[in-house]
Length: 206
Image (cartoon, rainbow, N blue to C red; front, side, top):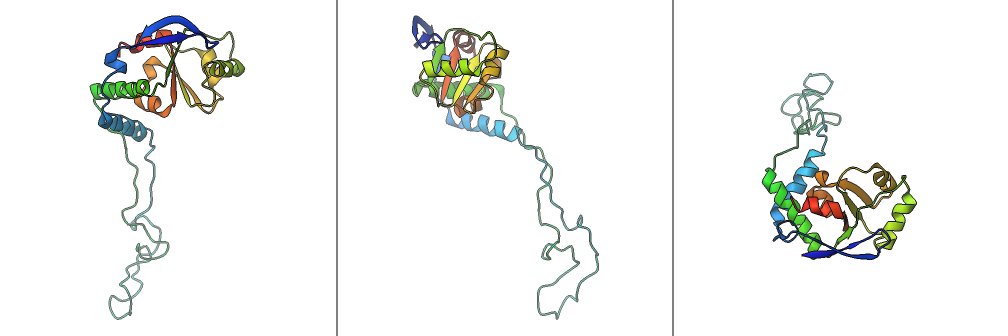
């Protein structure tokens, strides 16, 4: 499918770019999207949670009372999980939450997410631009010209551009990434995608 290209003033340039059907027009695979996002979130977990079990709690190992005849539950030492201040039963231990998703599955999940954005009419293509210096004011003017102010945006650049990145860094609802760093989570997390013209050409090769 073809989509119009706008300039930074929000005007239609009259140019069109082609969104490849094999990337932006596939039948989305919801299960692969779920797996890819789950892996992304799992890989971000520190996995450092730790609680002490009864063998690790500092305290005497003397048996508190006799086994029978006490009129209540049986108690071992003061480190028992049934005692206040005792160890925890089956508490968390440091672990690695990461798991593997195949490369082709991750690629298909990303294409599925992009296809959803096309169906939602949530993609805007802007001709290549840059800023002479980092200016948040200029970036805000860009979003206003495109009628996207107030929306959660993901701006996809063909390559790193420090001035654009720094201009958007302080904006809560805006994220800037490159084609090589684009992933399923970022696509779904944004309400609207702003693609540079050169970015579309690179993404058509996904």
